Image (tube, rainbow, N blue to C red; front, top):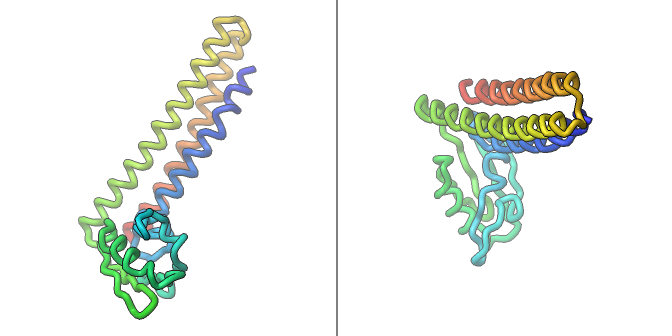
Amino acid sequence: MYQEIINKIKPEIEKALSFLEREVSKIRTGRASPSLIEDMPVDCFGQKFPLKQLAAISVPEPKTIIIHPWDKSYIEGIEKALSDSSLGVSPIVDKDIIRISLPPLTEEYRKNLLHILAEKQEDVRKTIRHWREKAWNEIQEGFRTGTIREDDKFKAKDKLQELIDQYNEKIEEIGDRKEKEITE
């Protein structure tokens, strides 16, 4: 009975972890990556589109991103979105492509990125705590109504904590990996 309750929250915790991985991939490091800009909203014909729907994005060199819009009419909107972004880059339009050269990270900017990373990790930890609490309340309710025995209640608590610890370790691993990229 209690295992069903724990299994029910696993997909939700997995979603939170996947969300963290996507968000972390968008944090700029010293290296260029399409994930830095692919979901950036671009105003085009009065509508917002993610950049990846308007252009091909490539990384020919470690500090350079090339954007090749599917249509020349997208160039102005893409250039404005990049200029207004928090990446701190100046896009250069060269005929029908847009080139971005990533400047080296300053120490202050690195500290700011590490702070953002820590916030994102904490947000996911909060989500996981929410699901743990929800499952624990359900287990206690099962105990009160008699569908879960007292021994099983304590086994469930241990199993639940074990699961949460595993996911907290994964959050740390993701954070450590990104921190290493930022500080290199």
